[in-house]
Amino acid sequence: MARQRQPRLQTIAIGVGLCVAMVLLGAAGCQSAPQESLQAQFLKDHVQGRMVFIEFGLIGCQLSESGLDKMTRMCREKSTPDLAYARVEAAKDPKVIEQYYAAKSPGFPVCRDADSSLAMAYDATVYPTFVLVDRFGHVRYRGPLPADDKLAAWVDALKGEKADPGPGVALFGTVTLDGPGLLAQTQLPDLQGA
Image 1: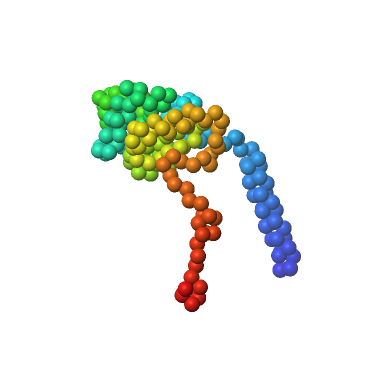
Image 2: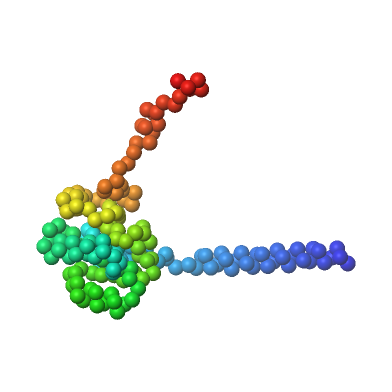
């Protein structure tokens, strides 16, 4: 009697496993297209196909406020033509945000990011972080507030790009090392210590 039960239990287990697999495969096959990335949605909503200089900042942070003031001045003076500006605000209190930006009146979009999801999408994990995005939506600089002449030079270089350089393009202000070249020039000591 015990022998008849064991094959029956195996059959039930196999049947349950197949049902679960069918449900999972069915659910995977019926998924809709992936949602647009946070980065793409932000750019589409605020700067649509333009180069943009974004500050990820926080009300009450002295460096963030200094950066916002400088960006506001740059925007008003149009010191870097063809460049759009935006601020991503990490403060959580909507009333404080509204009052602060009503007084500041920056002249460019301010996007609330209370849960820091947009900051994480742009890998802006420290406030303030400044990000330069090209017309194709690729991050080309990420870091502290650059000098005006550097930013202007980078924007000029981006204006000269006629085709999408792709997502793996190197960031401005970074140094890339030639790993294979460095390894080829490296000499390791022999076992005698020479």
